Amino acid sequence: MAEREQVLLEHGFVLHQRPYRDSSQLLECMTATHGRMGLVARGSRRAKTGQRALLQPFAPLKLSWIRRGDLGRLTHVEADGLSHALEGQRLLAGFYANELLLRLTARGDPNPDVFSCYSRCLAQLAGVQGVARTLREFELELLRALGYGLELDGDSATGEPLRSDASYVYELEQGFRRAEPEDVDEDHYPGRDLLALRDLTLDDDASLRTAQRLLGRALKAHLGDRPLKSRLVLQDIVSRGL
Image (cartoon, rainbow, N blue to C red):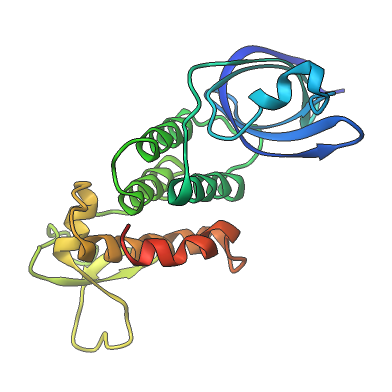
């Protein structure tokens, strides 16, 4: 029999919720030290419990649960600060970040770096930084946190630093190498834009578009062919560099 786990007041966010049985909810939560957790919130859809208003995406929470097996039972929830008020494009971007976490993480796999970059993404979406730049930074940091980081420091073929005046092609699991005349069918990435992504100085439309193409390709290698629902909605937004 699986060992019983009891966790008290863990920092976390609700990524997704759906009705479960008559009056409960099944939650997918991202937590600070336990990773993604599946939790049953019993009776949370009853108005008198007050839990339903708390268990919303983008709201910092403190969660307590008891777990034996894959699913835990939520025993307590309280607010851990003000909810990030996201609207319009920023709300869609938040749901995109949530869907990425749901697709790329496994339940019960602790990764504090994932929680940190997600928390930072929500704070930036609630601030003044552009949506596209915030998402590109989140994608880059998330890949690194999951162990799939892009090597943006040097040419994989020669070991030389990337040059701003050169053009590169990206090979999965190899990295970047300088483009050759015969690479006519390859996707080319300007060195200046790769350096901007490395340094998180995505200050113009060109560097944002390059980052979108590159990170989209890197993510697809781990997401597979099934498209993200939220990305389809965001496609026009990010292509215009908003």
